[in-house]
Length: 44
Image (tube, rainbow, N blue to C red):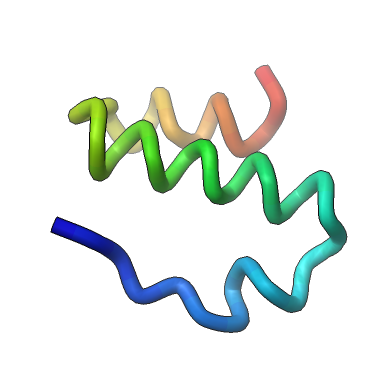
């Protein structure tokens, strides 16, 4: 499994890129729901 993220992560400010990476990791590696990943991305 994996994700093609490209500029969606690399062209964001560092803090936002880290949150997006954590959200993607939660979905891909941990089976998290989209709602859970959005909460991670939003910093909740």
